[in-house]
Image (cartoon, rainbow, N blue to C red; front, top):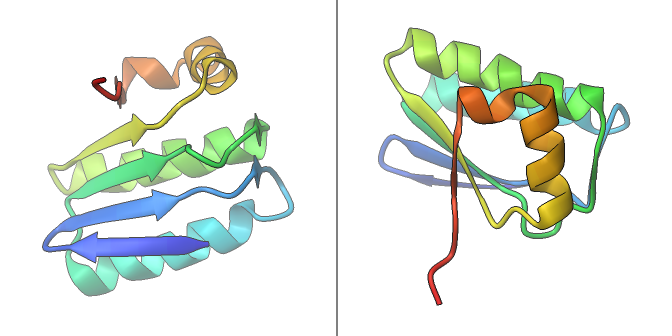
Amino acid sequence: MKYQVQENCLTIFLPKELDHHNAEEIRREADYVIERSHIRYIIFDFEETKFCDSSGIGVIMGRYKRIYMLGGEVCAVHTNERMKKMLTMSGVTKIMQIYEEEN
């Protein structure tokens, strides 16, 4: 996984498939960065992501809970139509803003 930290904001560049095979690694690494870098904002970048299962949704929800308790926010960028539908159906869009790219 690729991560970028700018001040108190963590951007997580999600893999092509966000599933049970890589969910634990993302969870572990993100939590480490959140603690060490005093993160208050997380941006999930879905640009490369083509698939997400319930484990992936769990990663997002778990990071949201951590950041929310710290008074922060979580959002998503570069979501394709399939990912938007998945995030909406799972209820994630009720807790997380999805930002569209402006042309």
